Image (cartoon, rainbow, N blue to C red; front, top):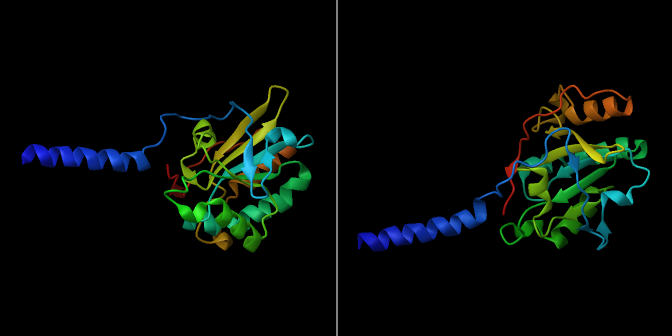
Length: 203
């Protein structure tokens, strides 16, 4: 009987771990070069960073529909794209979750959310869940600012959008805006990494 209980516990732990264990990777560090990707957008087209010939860099944000932290940041993400896309730093949003675990993040739900919120940027699905581990993203939202250089798309900042997920009116430090403004001015980003606050990516 005791052996049966132990075996049952092992089976349960195996099933749970299949949905919760993250890939064993540290992902990108500041200064690394990010490889390109080709992911499906909500309009059915494939999007790659190389499509943006005139871009100076990218604000890559791993986000989703179902995480309350991600939802709290949606208007700020839209504002980032409106402010910086025309300056050469467009937002590229990527939904990394396993939709079997989070059906509210499936493609139809993504399309509906984008329409409802007026997304002005690509909202891509990491369907095979191969891109977010390369980056090392663990949360939604999780931001990676890339700058185009002669070497490639260099990671310049990793972390949170700002310092207050609860209320945009209470934000005192806008990490992403500060970093992109510095890059546009040709400077070196001072705060290169912060702790991303959000929901764990579902695998």
